[in-house]
Image (cartoon, rainbow, N blue to C red; front, side, top):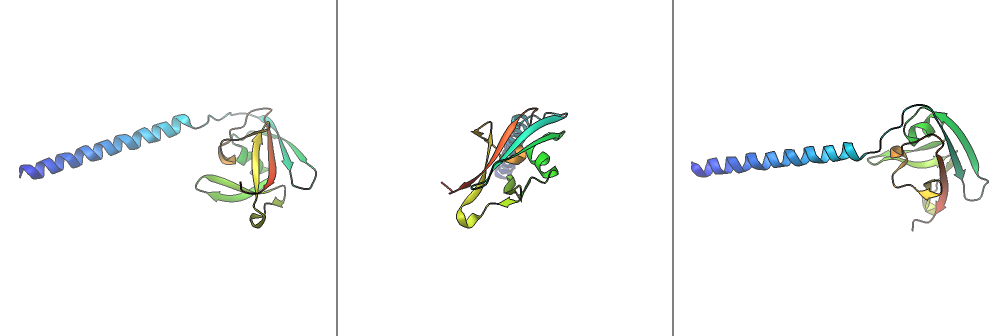
Length: 136
């Protein structure tokens, strides 16, 4: 009987620890994700295809994330994944996976650290979508 009480107590402790860990992970996620910038913003988006001239878009938007602003304007398209939107098409130009093509996103010439769905936009931001060939 006392062994049964000991097992029950360990189970309750294990579940409690698990719940505390889950709560901690949720808190870390919500405190570390980028803060949104509400209000109207003007951003510049340059599209740099492989063998065509660069295209520049100047957008005014009240959207908070880059993907939202570009989807509204029908500049990008892609596939929704567990990590957010995977951009496959920019300005009607679709990356060809058979040629190992993909769209690289940079901000002011620096590669972004997150995907397009998590990029918080601010007024006067400049982004570049460059079609790249080769995975490595």
